Image 1 (spheres, one colour):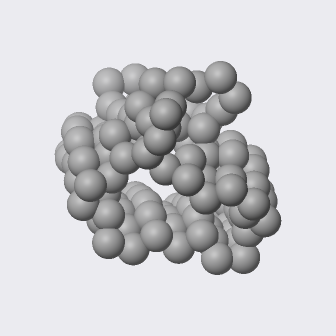
Image 2: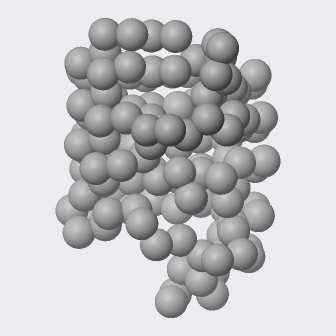
Length: 127
């Protein structure tokens, strides 16, 4: 409820070290000013796609390190995830097996990306 009230003006969210936070509930009307989000060492088992889509035009940095995320996008997700403002993307120390970059089914594009940290995962396919 508090996040819903803050959503229209919130620019940065740091929620590190909250193991009960599973990333499934986000404000219904998006977060139009969100620039930076950090959710390290939380209870994330899935990539918070709803959150990222809610602020995809402004999100410049996201840190989801040290969670249990196994896939960037859910199975069967074919729509492009275009994050035009994203400059820093960290998903170190998760359980990723692949990371879908632009390709036949363009799953992820971030033309402004400068830092991509996928260290300490189980990546077999990059691209």
